Image (cartoon, rainbow, N blue to C red; front, side, top):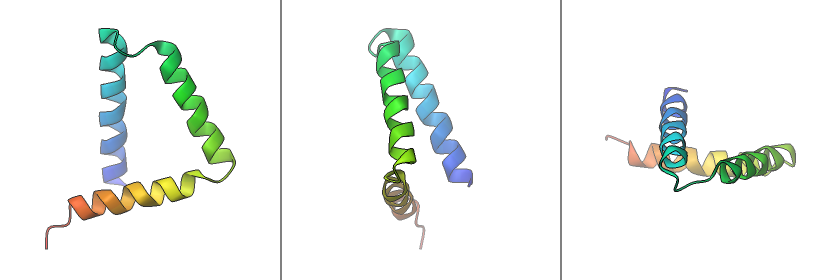
Length: 63
């Protein structure tokens, strides 16, 4: 849960900075958000969440 919160905050900050700098238009952010909601509603978000969790756990594995 903690890594998810941190990752969400970092992605939100990067998105904000890209929109502010003009490299990313607001409609790009809205379109990406709509795509995320659509993927969640049709059930395709679960494999993406599992893959990201696996990658994050693999990168932060300390043993």
